Length: 192
Image (cartoon, rainbow, N blue to C red; front, side):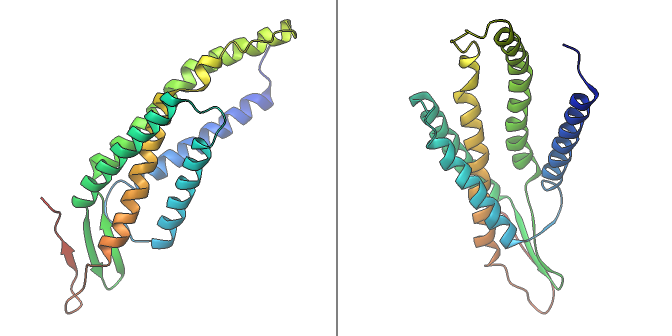
């Protein structure tokens, strides 16, 4: 089976979209960020809904649920640590926060690395399974079933979701306590 121009084009388009999303995600981990409360709430809701969908999936397993619970707990712990090391300031231009670069970048890199790993491992298996299905339509067993449901991937997603849900919630709450004095920016110090 030879790849067509349409397949190559769609693959490149998807790759470009993924790279753009990754660029935006990593950019949010550096420097002073404007506090956009509505966007944070929407992101928290999207992550939460997706967590519920994953938990209510009929393909769930005990190992998967334990990995999700552990990931969410670790995400919560990291978020609390990150909030304690986030700087907040109020200026005439608005409210801003400066996230801890290393924590957010590490959480995002863990999840993205796992997805890339899964794609590299699973894609050849999927491709082989499709070829086998074309050669033998009577094939009843799913040859890549063991690769479809990974507790590690689920745990890392819940770590990411738990981190960002708690972090955004903490940023919204903590930013309300930062005030201005005489039109000068007041920067809250991280808790040590």
